[in-house]
Amino acid sequence: MDGPPIFAGLKVIDCATYIAAPTAATVLADFGAEVIKIEAPGDGDPWRHLHQRPGLPNSPHNYTWLMDNRNKLGLALDLKSEAGRAVMERLVSQADVLITNQPLPVRERLKLRYSDFAEKYPRLIYASFTAYGEEGEESGKIGFDLTAFWARSGLMDQVRADRDTMPARSVGGMGDHPTGMSFYAGILTALWQRERTGKGAEVRSSLMGNGLFSNAMLVQAALCGASIPSRPPRSQTTSALGGTYRTSDDRWFLLALSNEVKQWPALIRAIGREDLGADPRFADVDSRRTNAPMLMGLLDGVFATRTLAEWRRALDAEGLNFGIVSTVEEAANDPQAHAAGILRPYADTGLMTIDSPFTVSTVAKVPITEAPDHGQHSAQILRAAGYSEDEVARLRAAGVISGP
Image (cartoon, rainbow, N blue to C red):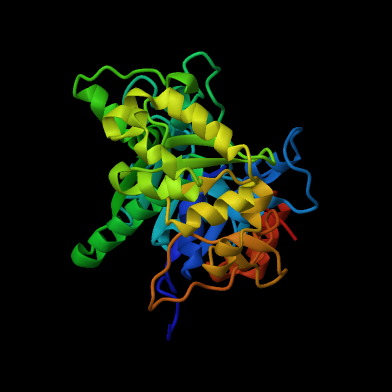
């Protein structure tokens, strides 16, 4: 990992809010891009304050902001003012990538559309993110991952415990973060095209598009004319070797045995019930499927006799595929996540964070630094863009920029 980070010298403007679009900028920053996070003066990006909402985890740290805006420079800029728009124009003229998820009508008012920049800056990669896409009656609607990704895609309906239970709510950012990764991939695709042609491009992505892609197996089935059944109650399962089980210490794990011919003998060894191998009710795949509710009830009784730790050892010893249902606290302290480098420390505080989910063997990521305070680097960014000290002072006095 010799030499500078792969994106050293790449200049990115993150003029986006909340999670998905800023996540793409965060990953660029992880690999060395200079990312300028633009927020409005005053309260700034609403995501900066979401951790304070009732019902969310209480922490002395702004954990939502730390995760999604690390390694960025902070600029508080009033884009509604003519002077602020001029600052933005200068920054864009020096940038390689502009990322925005401002609603389409807002972009028109602020002159932040691709058409406002494309002819003047033909090498610019303009990365546009929306909730529902940029054509159609709902193109101007706002949306969150809970609504546009999770609910609209059919995922929310399909992951309910069974057809009689309420649809399941997603957790914060569950759709945004993977969507941000696909948006990052789109930006890199456009940068690669620019390397070959010298020309910039507009990149588009949406929460709805990513939600449907995440639910692609079932949506594709529907597109092929299939009828999509509701999830049946657990008591009507068609496969006892693919389900959740509770242990004696009131913990759950998910059994996921896809190769029954090979794994059925290993399972009955792991649970100490080799006698089931001679039971005609479970003699082959078809009989196990026919008698799946009966087999699930039998396994319920077996797994209720020992703790999760005991079952982990027994199932691992036979090489069986299963997953423990971790608590969030367990996930944050998972020894495997630490060993694999999935969790990394901030260089300036020592707090741990979740790394972007891939590495490149010959490329180092930059040390992780905390997300900027509101407008923390406003003056520094403007000086680097060519503004004099007097000009910076006038812009500050006029309220066009703010920050320390």
